[in-house]
Length: 132
Image 1 (cartoon, rainbow, N blue to C red):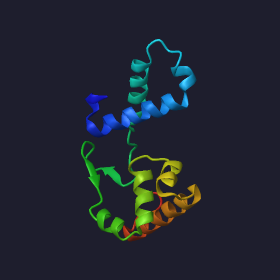
Image 2 (image 1 turned 90 degrees about the horizontal axis):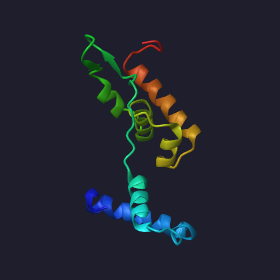
Image 3 (image 1 turned 180 degrees about the vertical axis):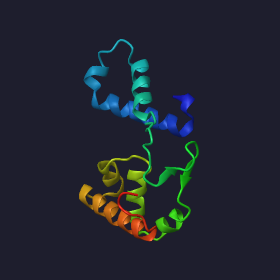
């Protein structure tokens, strides 16, 4: 647990203790519970790596370097905080509607509405059509 640093190490230890408390009947009969619980802590605090999908806001300029619309930052700033957050998390970072809803304490349908309105405003502000 020390290899994770002070914050992540504490979190890993807390996860291991919480798991042990919930599953004490299993832990009590183990021959070597400490290594097992260390592994539980590691697994529960492991950072999830997401493969970032291709963003609809990016296009290839010359085939090898990504290009981003220069006015995108200003257009994103014109969105409401909810629209911007939902749109960026889903379309740029590949989060699911459920993940965003859990983070923002919203329903999935509210997240979808914020995304639809945000994308509509971005299309309008950037003069983009639905196919482009």
